[in-house]
Image (cartoon, rainbow, N blue to C red):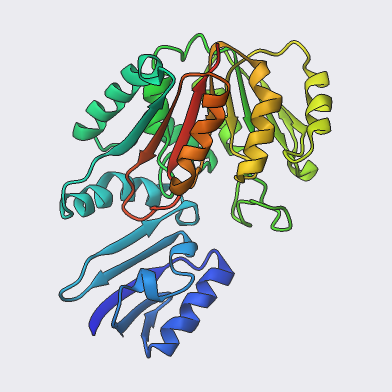
Length: 325
């Protein structure tokens, strides 16, 4: 048995209560708020259902075990930045040497993406501070930059030479906070957060978005959003009829996160990405990366995947990207 100090956020009530319930079963002592002391045979992140899902948790062994620390959107921007810049580097330095990311290329993808990958890997080996894009996204409540997903340092490298020339960004999936919608962000989500981040980061870009949840559609300066159901091709026809001449510099699928939805979306959207533009699929489960790469292979497009190392998110901190031709 090992004695742990365990703490977590109560913002996501269902997961927090599940964690409290399990802690009581282990005979834990509640010190104050959601700070507990507990003797456990295994690591708390493995033995306490709900702990990781609270999106703001830590477990510190008081003797002879590995530190666990998890921070997500529910922790808030200040906590996520502190974790990214101060806590995570200490945790990583205590671990065995690991690659910063696993990279795969297909159909000549290295010639297209290799420079951005090299820049990303070089800078992240020596710099752990949140990038400008990390801060922009996190300010609006997007999960792309710090916390559970860590894409924005790579995005900053990928778009390094395109920031001023980016004309059209399209992101499918607004991040609904209505919990009756599949693949929602939970009650704490901020619909449209990433779209606002892209607008601020790309000063000359028009930003478009789409979602299956009509309740979160909105329009703002340089942002327009539309309804689309990733599982229904006819809704894409209606979507493109609203913006028939659009040519995207980048199209991002951050929607339903199922393979069939991704396949159908690619079939209905790749034709709207201009030559040299990027088509990005986010939050790919690491065991499914090869399947998603095969989607681009069948189209004959250069592609790559990046599985970014994360101390706690060992599931879906992965991107698959194709280059339109």
